[in-house]
Image (cartoon, rainbow over all chains, first blue to last red):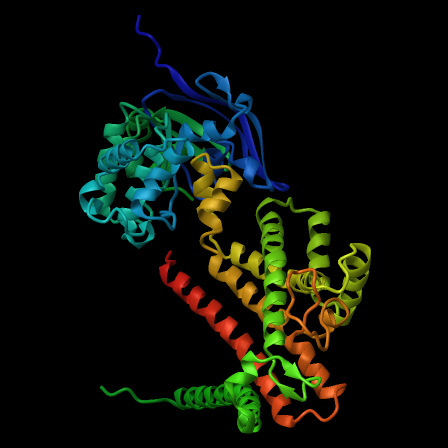
Amino acid sequence: MVDAPAVKLSVEDLKVSYGSETVVHGIDLEVREHEIFGVIGPAGSGKTSFLRALNRMDELDPVMSVTGTVRFNGRDIMGFKNVYAFRRRIGVVFPLPVGLPLTVYENVAFAPRLAGIKSKAQLDEIVERCLRRAALWDEVKDRLQALGSLLSGGQQQRLTIARALSQDPEVLLLDEFSIAVDPVTTMRIEDVLRELKSEVTIILVTNLVQQARRLADRTAFFLGGRVVEVSVTEDFFTGPVKDQRTRDYVEGRFG
Amino acid sequence: MRFQATALNQRNRRIQQAVRTLFGLMTLLLIVPVVIILAVLVYNWAPAISLEFLTAAPVDQGRAGGIFPAILGTVWLVAVALLASVPLGVAAAVYLSEYAPENWFTRLINLAIINLAGVPSIVHALFGVGAFVVFAGMGKSILAAGLTLAIMTLPVVIVATKEALQAVPQAFRVACWNMGATRWQTVSKVVLPNSISGILTGVILVVSRAAGETAPIMFTGAVAFLPFLPQSVMDPTMAMAYHLFYISTAATGVPDEIRYGTALVLITMVLLMNAASIAFRAHLRGKKKW
């Protein structure tokens, strides 16, 4: 008998609301270690709110409230006393690249500095390693002291990936990372993600069904704040239909 | 095919030109008073222009001599006012913008600050007398007058700083929080460094008001004539605004050119301090890009 893959994140009856409006109505799912877990679904289906709940961002948003249980390595995330250290174990990449108004170097060194790393040599090493892993090193190695916000859109998005990796995260949350990135850069980032899979568990929220198909091992289809189905991604496209709505969505017949 | 302007195009163009001319004239009108004031002051001071006017003490209740003690006193007062109001105002603005929960109490505080900005300066002056001169036992001193000016200018610093902080995109904060930064780390490393230029706008306004106001200092620290230069912040002082007030109203027989000269020096001091802040702000803005 084969061991079942370890569960990295488990989500039970997760509900998210903003003020009086509930946008996630009870989600249950499990994300396994070292997989790319895709999340697809139309606008307003609760994908982003789901991601925000995973690293307790609701605590910084006065109108957002979350109920239910999220377990990280089997441990309830509400039980982490040091929420800042907890957040560093989960890297996040946003739809639009947010290059902090700092130099390229300082963008990547930001999180390690927060974690208390002061040694220049150590920071240099982290910056170079993360920029290499984000496939950006060759383009910026000569201008590490330039402002990160002056890079092109695609470079900035890779910079934010490098920054997310600088935390040495166990989980990487990607929220429609390719929305502002050209197709070539998108493919480069996708290659990066495939390589990262061996070290990091990745949750990939995407509007591009084909991107989920290219990358995700398993995928959840969100609709109206609920999970319609979670399957091995390929089953969404071929094989027996589990839920007609999923098949309609991935084939573009939704509406 | 050539582009043929329709009647609508032509009408739009006429309106556009009329609006531009009108707004341009308004802008010109705006600078006319400034130019006239400066011209009148320079013209009337001209007979008495001398370096001694800036470096000597007044003689015979300001009827002769210079205004050096008043210049020095104004610098003292502005310095005390800035030292008190900028740290306090920036700290309050950071709290209100970055920490305060959105509730009735925060709204009440914001309302109070806006109202504080509307309090007449003479009321601030009387508050200063009660709080600093009498209750805190500072007497008529630079400290009491500077603090009164600080209270008066506090709302300006708070409002300017709050606006500067809120101009920093929320996405920067969220990115920091996602990296495990605390609110303070986010504020100190990303938000504050990117709102310095807006905060300086508040500082510029503080300098102008602190140097120019007469009412808040006349009961709290400014005197018409002092035979010595202030040795510490516990001494009373002469000040430009009050000196001008005094030689224009109370003292008789002061030559006009001294009055005009005093006014010109006061304006020039304010303009110079503003210019320095504006230059510094421009320097910082040049570095900011997102």
